[in-house]
Length: 486
Image (cartoon, rainbow, N blue to C red):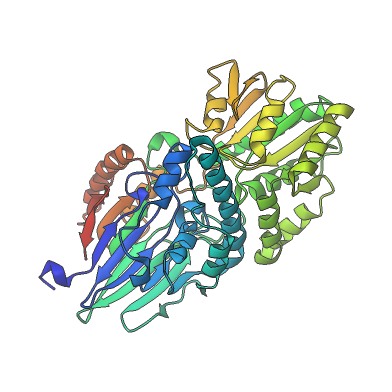
């Protein structure tokens, strides 16, 4: 194994090499060459509509038909929602995913296909050039047929050279880390991917319990919240819950005609905010305000929760679903009629609408309607990219906001709830990667899925911490084009 050509090559070909979205890593070895892909994620929220289209429709740095397998950890779009394009362009092998993955992936991917169709239409109309959708519903259905779910915490032999193990990551419903055991020249190398790890400083809700990867020849780790300034812990969550209680009293209980909009993501964030509202106001006799889940996709994901949760989570979710205050809006006409009725009657309402960054979805329509009145409030849950509509509203630097080409007065109040990051935070990440949870050595640690400058700063902290523990793990700050031999 001394010659580099005889080693396993790990190539970081996705946008997550330098940013937080577009996860994609290619692993190649052997003669004839074998190749597998870990993650197939969309580039999201960082470019113009045209720039994002170009990034996601660009040629792959490999031929999809030559891939042996694909492995995916998580149903968030930045990890899995480019997979239908792989299938469209010729991939016909198996895609191995954690147990429970498929029922969430299918509605998420169909929603993504609809957005792509709409974006392609808008680009064609604006530029007078033809932009076909990146993929369509047919590609999604073909992709679903290739998914093969794997039981958690079980080594599954794929073939004579590849074994996989999915372990709980604690980030979302069914989220996982991926451990690959690859046999090359009669030597087995362990290559592990953390995927997105949950915020272990927060109580677990509607997800599995995080498990650290115990050892690896190469550990590829996310660094989304490696910046110590963006940390959130249990005390921060308690403060945010008190803040939610306060704004609900101020804007919809004490004001008969106030409205609150929570821009949320359809998968996980909507369900968590619903749970908090239930805990706070189900026993409160003063609370008579209807809560609307205003998102077709969020409604479908809630349906998945009905059958995928277990134990205490299932009991909690059943009570939330049975709460008479909660209503589910699955189409725009119903949303428009509901808002108009509340405005006409002068009655209060709470809306949970996607998307969280307000790059699309019903949250954009509701923001346009609610922003002009100081009687209303927008409550943002967690980080939003500064260039997104959510980011611009949060900054509140101007008296007006442009939404879909229309200038809208920005008089509604804004609250930022900063504790709603579902990623592992700086201190826990530093402890984890340096072996502070009793793990054996990681020979090499590759840092991905984070701001590049932040990764560089974090890598220095990590090297110092590794040295303090008398370990020899090598830390690699991944950049575009980085390749690691194992």
